[in-house]
Length: 332
Ligand SMILES: Cc1ncc(COP(=O)(O)O)c(C=O)c1O
Image (cartoon, rainbow, N blue to C red):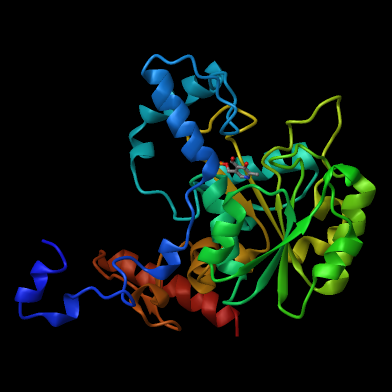
């Protein structure tokens, strides 16, 4: 049914006007990923037999290593893997991410600092959605990955590009960032090695920028997804490792897509302070400390409450409530 023919019905509220769009302005304002659009076209042409060479999406052209595929096949055969997982990710996966992070970048964290996402792209969006209020500005060194400004806008923020050119090796300086800072600046986006330039910030510059952000009271979202894609043995230092005092205001985004040629598997994560990566803290605490599962009231529109389903045997009911009493009593 078109908008015009729906005017025959008795429900004028459904009539579309230019002000009241069919989809929200927020979503309508998002631009399609230029790289994925080019990549999709190239793949379609290839499928049609055209000898297209793809310089589009940042995607390794080799398959995911066998040992990973074999482990995934084995996991698929385990019924335990067919179930809902905790919303923040499987505990064993969070442990593995913590160990990987300590091994690869030297950043020490705990599973409570990790939120598993459907790829790095979702991690970027969730981080901005958590940090930004409408009108908050994000300093965005340019050239930048096409998704950043869209994710910032989707979260109500304002991207503020800070351009680095070939003269500086595509690296922004703390002085340039300071010049772009306003009272509304909340976050600095930092991506090293960078997409699209491949530029890697040396440790001294990471430190200079990190200390500047700390001084300015900003958050840093550091995207480390290309950490292993460097040339000539250059390493890309992680900002919260170089400036440990920044860790409380730093969110690391990473994932398996690039290093392990797993772009289609959609596994990424956020690593950051616990208040950024967890939403309803009391329910988490109760599960961790007392091993009693309850649902936060936020899920039912009533923050400040807990919801307990009591479809349990009497023994479990008594034991569960006793554990809660011990935990909450000991917290007084
Ligand atoms: C800089 C950067 N960060 C994050 C991602 C997200 O990767 P994915 O969503 O495939 O895990 C990409 C993908 O191209 C990227 O270029």
